[in-house]
Length: 492
Image 1 (cartoon, helix red, strand yellow):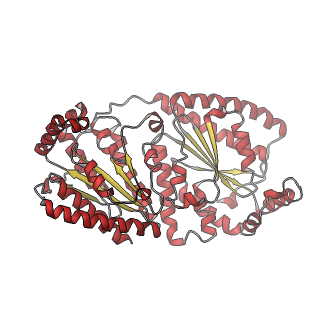
Image 2 (spheres, one colour; image 1 turned 90 degrees about the vertical axis):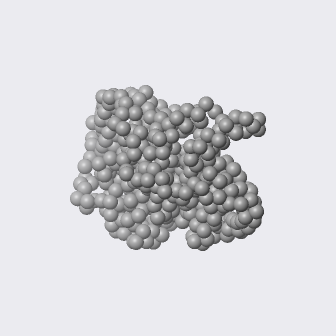
Image 3 (cartoon, helix red, strand yellow; image 1 turned 30 degrees about the horizontal axis):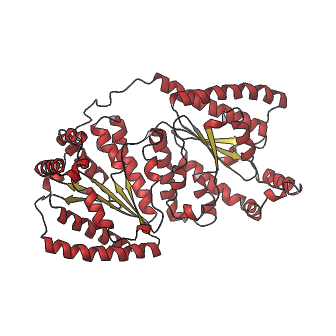
């Protein structure tokens, strides 16, 4: 692919100046429209060292309002970033709706530098490519525009530019020994780039190869590509018709499954048995907390369940004897305005634990296929797509080495009604019961169907669901402790 690119293309200075000014005005106007319509934009610059990424990024942003964009320079991961899944540091930098994020190098460092340096083995390549394509598809499905530019120059031109930089005392520092090493490996990097471009070029996030030996030509090509993509997106957004979010049977399960119907909610424990096992398992979990820290193994624990199923009490018993420096409980409520301005998974990626730590989610990303589905807070297309997106996210986290435990706490309607009434009668529990709880209870069947489908579509070998029979809180607490301990021991 790269060998076929004509690097001799140029633009005269007078033509460049005339076109650049007109394109700059158009780009500034489009930025204002992006903000008005809430369209997020991601621009990725990859390519050879000395290909002019910094210069071309600077030319692109000059016509823009600096309040509306961010530029991120991607270096080798630091210690904090190494302790989290590969895509974590990029998810946390994805733009809010209406903003532009520009990446000077990006997640493609994984398929270029890491591959040539031997840090990414050949057998791991397909998974890395899959994760990147999934990441980009999830963002574009959510309305992001992704523009990817590969700046191409020849080996001869690269060498020439390095020599020019080194011969000038004020710029010599910019050429490092690492740069010169990569220059000698030009052929290896070209092979890696060819493979990367072929594997990650998609209709939703295509690559644009930029002939970058003439910076004027490269600048105009980038301006035109960006403007064209923004115009097409804004045209599609303005013509889009409002959707009925509760249309087309959004409250009906698509799968004929009966997972919950086969759960025996009559299982229980006697008080003495519960106390004995609780103390023993809490002690063992404290030992494992130390072991996962030593071995740098992250743990993600997800709690979902019926209202009044006992999630809070269950979490308290799980964490009662743990070192508080090694875990965090993440309570999930309705998204705030900042969270709504991002992809729905963005706020959860921000809470993924670093290696050696535990994150416990009191409700989670599964709200997309539960409350948001049933209440019509997202479209049927949104929540149906979420099954794949959630599985992809969990697969990426698991591949990093994380232990993922997911619990659905199930009670029957009679037990829920008893607990609701108890909460109303006891002063110290009245804060737990709201009008929203009673309203949700009226939609028991709709939530039941949504849970059934969620369990069927998102229980995977790397992140299985455990249904916890919770009519007896003592039984439920011990079952969760046993399951977490077994999962961590198996991973260690």
